[in-house]
Each structure stands twice: as structure tokens, then as C-alpha cells.
Length: 297
Image: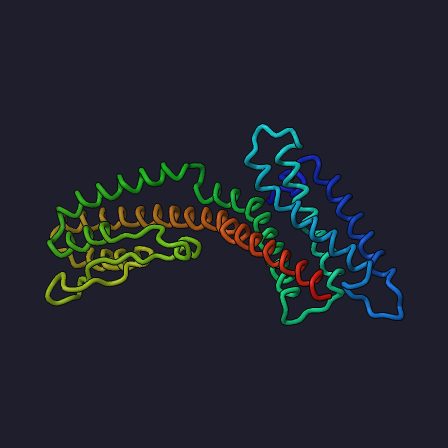
């Protein structure tokens, strides 16, 4: 069950939500007060008030990053600032939309509005990520830490290398190549999507060891070992292959947990890599928007 947003944002969440709702209602009333003789637009005095309010909100919301880094500040708690950031960030969408009077075009003014919408959307995703992903991550880890799973993976690798010594040369080479060529993590996209680019020696290649094949999610290795068990000519060899198959299954499980852990952690952090640069771009577009308005309108 997801953690309630009010719990995550602290006891001040409801108070900030009430203030943000009041701001939205006042903005709507101001927008509707424009004379019916002219279509609503950002150039009326009501539009200027909404625009000024929106600009001040954007700049104030951007101060959250500074407040989070000033641990000794007495200007409220960080949790309170986050609650205000979320509530007034959503209210900004209403204020800015009314300021634009629902008019968009191919110009810097619309660019600032679109960037604002993208920033707010990334912030909503960030809220979702912090509410949901830690719980999912804890469930994936099954009560263990990531370091515990890494330790277990290293132990399984050592056990597999020893067990493979009792098998034939081809199986030994395939198993060792599967261990050595396992990938975990990678680039940002690979982490977020949980991609697996692991490879191993192709047991069907002639001559032996001449090429590799995909070992995605360790399934090809499992299939190879499962096919080798009934082909064993000796009881000891069959037992060794059966043990290898069991270890390979444990290894696939540990890798699946670690890969899911990396993916969830990457998704938890991804929004910051988007939210902060987009916010900087929004502030730049906002300054250009204000400059153009005062110079040419």
C-alpha cells in the first residue's frame, strides 16, 4: 500500500494545500473579472498580475534546492518546504495557464509555458517515485540489503567455478565465460530499463570458443546446462551438471534482484537529472519572456 502523500510531506501538507487552493480560486476569479468586450489575454492588467504572480512562484519554487543545502537555516523545515513546493508547484499550472489565456504559439512565450508544464510533470513523477519506489525496492530486496545480494552473487560465482571443474572442458569454458561476461548496470538508459547485455561462449560454435552469444537474463546458460544433464555419460558428471544447474538458477535469481534494484534506484534518481536542468531552462525562458514583453509589447 502506498504511503499517503500527507505523511510523506509532513503535517504542513494540508495547510499548504489549502493556501494553494485559495490561490487557484483567487486566480480564477481575477481571470473571470476581465471585461467581456475583449478576449482574455496576458496583456490586460489582470493578465499582468497573473504573470507576475506566476514568475514569483517559479523563482520561489526554485529556492527549494538552496534551502535543502542550508542545514542550519531556521526558515522552516525541509519537509515543510517540500510540501509547499509540491502544492504551489501544482497551483502554478493554474496561474500560468490563466495568464496565457489558453493561447499558444511558436514563440518564446509558449516555450516558457511548455517548459513549465514539463518541469511540473517531472516534479509529479518525482513525488510518485519517492512515494512508491522505496517500498517496491524493499519488496524486491526481500528483507536483505543490496550488499547482501552482491555478497551472495560472489559466493555463487566461486561455487560455480569450482563445480564446473568437474564437468567437461566445453562446459567449463561456457560457465566461466558466462560469469566473466555478465553485465550489471551500464549506462543510464540500460539501468532505467533494466537491460541485460550479458554474453557467454557459444557452445555450438566451431571451432570451440570462436564466438559468443547472448546470455540475456542467464536463460541461455540455464538452457545449455539443462540440456547437458541427460547427456552425461557418468553419474558423477550428471551430479556435477545438476549442481551447476542449481547454482546457475540461484545466480539468475540474484542477478534479477540486483538488476531490478539498480533499475528502481535509477528511476528514483532520474527525475532529478531532468527536473533541475529543465528548471534552469525554464528560468532562462522566463527571463527572455519578461524582457520581450517589456521591450516590444
